[in-house]
Amino acid sequence: MLNWGVMGAGGIAYVFGNGMRFTDTGQILAVASRTQSRRDRLANDFGIPRQYNDYADLLTDNNIDAVYIATIHPLHAEWAVKCAEAGKHLLVEKPISMNHTETEAMVNAARENDVFLMEAFMYRCHPQIAKMVELIQDGAIGDVLAIRATFGYRSGFNPQSRLYNREMGGGGILDIGCYTASMARKIAGAAANELFLDPISVKGNGKVGPTGVDHIAAATLKFENDIIAEIVCAVECTYGSNVIIYGTDGTLTIPNPWLPSSPCRGARTPLPADTTFPATQLIVQSSGSREPTEVMVTVDRDLFTYEADTVAAHIADRQAPAMSWADTLGNMQLLDAWREEVGVVKS
Image (cartoon, rainbow, N blue to C red; front, side, top):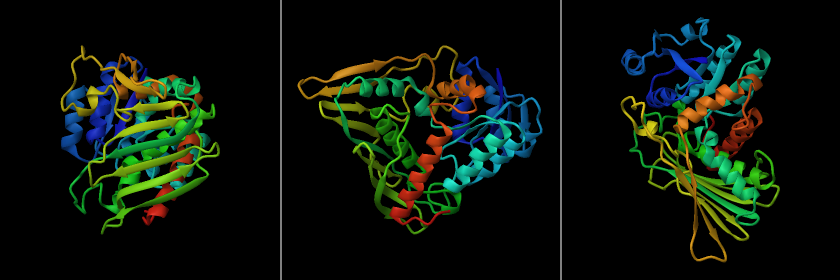
């Protein structure tokens, strides 16, 4: 049983709190937030016994084994390093940091202090990804040739909001483009019987707003196995969210790539103990068939529960294959290159 401390008490921390209701691998022992109302709500709704108004107090609590960092992006690196130095295992919300340099410092701190570290790409922990890899490697669509991954929604422009404020880590690439980048790298890797591949070429374009962050961005990637990927993200328009993998013998579509099987994601109150979790599907369209084949993936827990359980299962290894240190470093390097191509000044 891992005793978790949650750093930050915003919306994603609430989702994690709900996800922890369906696991027997750990419990949330403490929450730290500088906003009392959020801290009180999280603690009261999920029966969290300890509250701290200073993040540093989590570091001195000897009963805390692991810290989930759910703060805004610019605070991730500083507090992850401090947590590692205090001997706390780490699950850090995506993007793990603001740039590759910060990420290297976080990985080095985890290595030097012998603690677990994983970037919180929860979708990577879901059985849907294992099934996707299995289908690719079994040749369900032949050889993979191309990938298209999108993630976009519309949020009204507010220069002070987290999404549009450069100092707060705003912009679509950091917020959701990181998903599309990590998925393309995962698929290209699966086609090569590797956990992931880094692209050998990144070409990007996009719309940068008056606050210096990207509102809409696209990139074309090329991998060493000649797979081409198109990745798109947007916070200014409802672009849609799906993944299509094109092969020599058909296509593999993932209609719900980022948030499968997650009642927790939309819940505003604690979910009941008898909550059921919906199956998700992948669609194989073979070149020689008119009708697609639906491949159902059944689950027994929430997406965010799978994430917490992944940490617990690999804590002794200090990193998890769902999102290893090398994987995270490569993804952040890609995001840096994408932002540079689009014309976003690094924060």
